Length: 297
Image 1 (tube, rainbow, N blue to C red):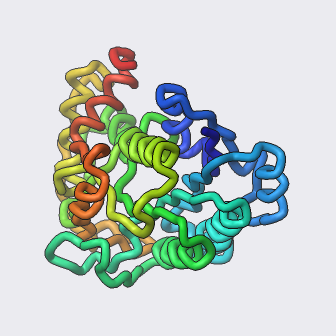
Image 2 (cartoon, rainbow, N blue to C red):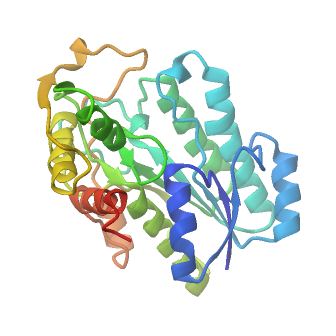
């Protein structure tokens, strides 16, 4: 079974490449250096050459604040690029697995968002990712989209690495405490995508559509930062823990509006794909910290 993977150098893409051999899956790994997903002819040419069996789109324009001014580039990648991959997959009668985001929701709810909750993005990033979801669904009925949140991973830059770096540079750090969501380990997303691929290989079908998929247990950025410090200290990645001061979103203005509450209800995914399951973000954080400290695999 061969996967055509877009976004191989992103947090999720790196994990897919790392874990795929364990599932006896081959990966045609692409990123912007060898495939421009905004060029559908380039995708068609690559697929004609490699004859992949499934398409996985982990590519995205994820610079949330920069997207407010780079809106066309964000749309080209997050919407048109996703559509191009879905179209090409459909032309070869292949399914596409696509990664989306909690930013498609407004963030104004007070209870977890269900899969069928009405999208209402409040940022350019969120709007372009929603457009990508819709274009993928229209272009290819055999699509499965995972909406995830607060992604952190071993590769690339993310909140965990930023907190570890600042811990070695500063005695005090201000972290927002009124934004609630579910941190999600890139390794867990990759595992889900690979298990879905294996399920498709075995049965030739999946229950297509959009699913919420994030790690278990909601938290806020301040609490998440404190856990990062704790585990970083225990594993020797930092020498002391700075004071982590809670601040409000209004005290840390950004060009893009962040969801204040983007906790997602993942029960439908668990019910339909019980063999995959949902892990806790703390287990993912422990795995990442262990890897960075040299004690993990």
